[in-house]
Length: 194
Image (cartoon, rainbow, N blue to C red; front, top):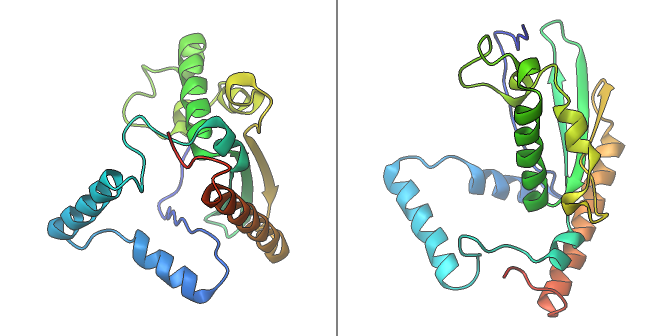
């Protein structure tokens, strides 16, 4: 079977334009210190929903708004021997990417259960291990959301680390796109959610 190694560490960071913005993001995304802190954060989130600053359950950005945005991430891995590899993921915005992942997983489970060997791989599993040997990744990349011609999910694997220029260009492009999108929402061209 697949082994991830004894020293697996996963760290997720969003690219930002400055050290100060990075520090602010770290503060905003760190785990609450205790239950009382978590309650304060939860109350703040509920207040945002009640004030119309965040969507209610079941709401989200409409199609026109979602088409402006996309998701992109780099995942870098180091083997126990010190070799690096990375994957560059690009796809539609998060609501659509989530739906594509869920439907692809369900279809794989329904149509390829014999390849997945659930009796020998049972338990709480990562998608990589659970869907190993199936067409899950191919399904993820096959169609845009609702087959309407938008962005498809894409995973490009490469040896080594991504270059600094590649990371900077991706970050610049995403920040520019987000700025234009936010301006369009502010000007009333698009709705934030409905």
